[in-house]
Image (cartoon, rainbow, N blue to C red; front, side):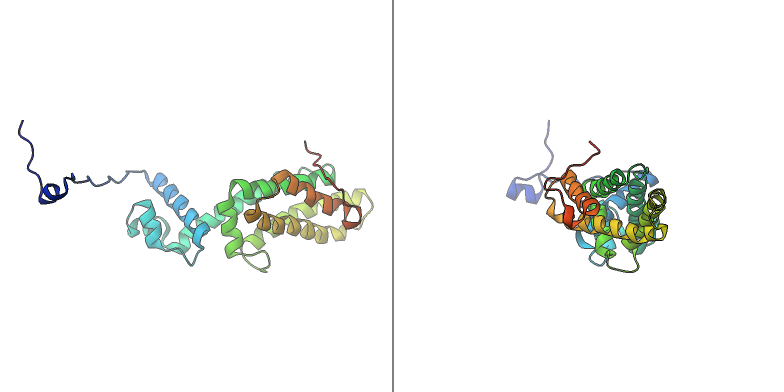
Length: 222
């Protein structure tokens, strides 16, 4: 069988031409999800300002118009990424607050936020990078206020049952949620000690106060 004619490059290098990589054909929803995944990773790595539509398109192996078609621009895709992460964090936090003993509720809230940091560190990095806790406005501040409102409602019930001033529930809710959130930001990079140990120390401080800290606190959930 006669062989094909070798190109000039093959004659010199002995290499065969590399076939172009075929673009994967996806449905509209699959492509949209792929673009969101790519953008999420880039926003976590570089922040909003450091990420471009060109890079999103390049990593997704599509042209820029495809990104514009789905999201209208960088602001559009960023808004969807942030909205999803915000809702995920809020749902995870609020779903843990079942009432019961206040200490157990605090443990649940601490573990929920730290679990989100552990399981979705890219998403948490996006939220805290572009909307720091210290800011009076912004995504992370907003979601923390939503969580604090849920905690306030439960604390008010507990305060009333124990004869405390219900008006202070808002103050304590903000303090507790802020303490857990700021610790989560620190733990995002530190990653030591382990999640449950961090949660146990958070509860130790919140429940016992500095004057009555336990030397080796343990969670009561387990």
